[in-house]
Image (cartoon, rainbow, N blue to C red; front, side, top):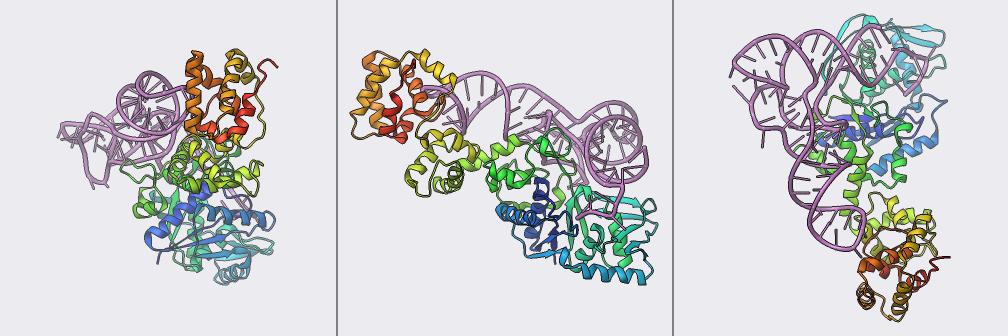
Length: 425
RNA sequence: GACCCCAUCGUCUAGCCUGGUUAGGACACAAGCUUUUCAAGCUUGCAGCGCGGGUUCAAAUCCCGCUGGGGUCGCCA
């Protein structure tokens, strides 16, 4: 029976590296028909906090990584103490005050890592290992070994940073007379500067990405690509397809640098291919948070707006920024826009356009375009002469979707009002 | 510093195991097409096997060394 676990410590938010470790564990379990255990390593009473635990569970769910079993080490202290006692009786460990310490055997050991192959260590270089601390709580390595053994974990898939913990833990298994699991050490994810991933080099918490408007499918897909490849030049792959193709042996051995640019590109791909209704639903909380939308809103109108921006919003937040004019009553112009409007010299022509548009009864893409084209022709202008200043007036921006689609969305009343602008005021 | 691990375009990677490829794809970048702007899309371009030795008819691929990078060295996890 294949059984793996992800063992986060609730001393901080779930970060991107942890999320990837969880993802690979989950994938391995699913690919092998095994099960996935979530084990909360909250032995550090000082630093473990419930809010972090809540956040980790939420992030896991958001990413779509369901677990079969959940444990908390803080509820298992008796078990660790019991095993430590046994080691003392067997003469493999000794007391130092309240603490229990393992006498480190001296030997050459070989570890076969599923990703790296054979790794050898000399435990003579290791110091005796603390198993139970003076406060009677277990140390990481001890709790980890006891739990992995008791929970029947068959494969330990974890970050590279644990590779040097492995020989110590192997010695604990040996002292306990228990069979160790198979190991696979994942290379770490690094920041854009090649160093450790940190807040300085970008967002590290999964919730930060959520807040920044990334969708879970894209994040998971990107994380998958960091250290693994489905082959056949495929970039976009969902969890279901990944399960079919996943092989732990194909995981890269070298660390990978996190690229926000590529994640953003993937996010844009997912957003473009979503159905507009589903995308709209995702957008609603972002819009409400900004006060752009109240509890009650016109879903149809919103969905139409979303469609117009679907290929123009790499992240959900981008929609809020780029389509803000649809939700605001009045828009503020930047100095740049004010200047460009003044330089366009189209005040008179725009007032002609405005007057003609105001006579329209049906304010649609087709009708506004017809009027616009007529006015341009009558005044002997190029379309571009009016398109740009009108867009600025309606949206407060120099860029955006097609002007007539925009007009139809903004609606007659607001369009007429925004076209009434004192260029030299 | 000691110990362990790693090394293909700027970045993520395919290829390596089972030597023979014009070393493939993607992001980014550049150009073009399209166009009312911006995106999207399509086309094209730029760019890589860290270095040095072997082994071999032949090395990105196998071996050794160097260099470079990463990780660990807590009664944190």
